[in-house]
Length: 190
Image (cartoon, rainbow, N blue to C red; front, side, top):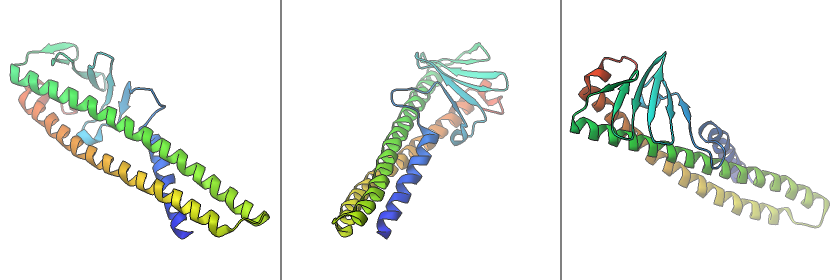
């Protein structure tokens, strides 16, 4: 039973954290705050055309799906290498956000399964108390289900760790863009 309680604790932890990441199923991000993983102090907007806009105190940097950069509405002249880097950054960034959303949704599903298991545990305990059911049978069934949830949680954790590597690569790309595009280098917040 102790293993069951530990498993339920893990599931509830994942469930509560997933609300900080995801939204409802089928929704897409349109605004993201706290870009700490990129060392950015800004908000983020993106649109259906796959343009990404970083905003900070009235200033904004927009990366377009055409591999262009606009700073406060002014188009920045880029050479082909800079454009390639902008395109790679933009696509990697959007893919990362989509994967984070997917992991968040998986976490919500896993959390819901954990809540259902918790309710099943309470129900099973009451049933065992007021019927001829054996508590050991209920515990064995619950432990099996808890182990399955724990495995799903471990898989989800591995996916999240893989995304950390993508985030690190994205940060390196952001730093490279800032170094190679002087106009971005002048922005202390980007």
